[in-house]
Amino acid sequence: MDIIKSYFPELSERQLQQFELLMRLYPEWNEKINVISRKDIGNLEVNHLLHSLALVKFLKFMPMTKVMDLGTGGGLPGLPLAIYYPEVTFHLVDRVGKKLRVAQDIAEQAGLTNVTFQHGDVLEVKGKFHFVVSRAVMPMGDMLKLVRRFINHDSHNALPNGLLCLKGGDLEQELAPYKKEAIVDDISSYFKEDFFKTKKIVYYPIY
Image (cartoon, rainbow, N blue to C red; front, side, top):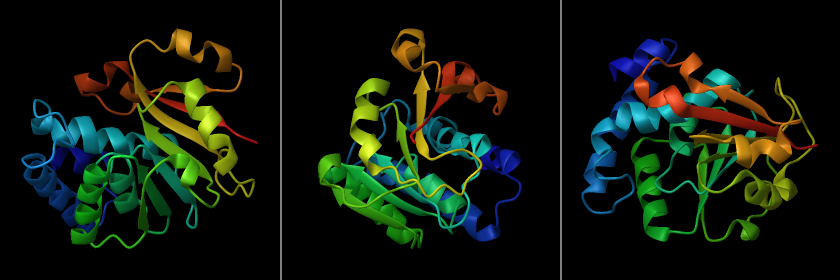
């Protein structure tokens, strides 16, 4: 937990306890259900929890913001963000029920009351959100087709409502059609660990 604490010294004791709980529960669950690669579970703090929190460095959500985490799997990036933002609501959606049950159990044990869950296709989701967040779920074009309908126009954050994706690798071809609107931010500008050298945040406003 020292790494997260060093980058986010503003975290309260309760929030630190919640992150410590995630550090304990994810490996326990991973023994039963493979929500994180077994080769990578030892890098949980940096490669998964801190990676999720990169979105905090890019944009601070204001209280009362509504966020959907599309393809959350076992709760990433939704659960780390829900810990950081207790006054923001998160709706975590995934097609794989067993992974979503892991996220639900961890959220319950962590005492997170600002998180809801939905098992199934994103097209079954009701309601509107200020932002959709996602972690390398699908190409940008496919994602935009799915999420446009969910973005409301009641903007109260520093950036217009839209899509925030955590991605890695060479994105030039994937993002070429969207380069006029998209903002691509290097996570290595926030975190010094080698893992983040090729990791990026892609933000796309949806009006």
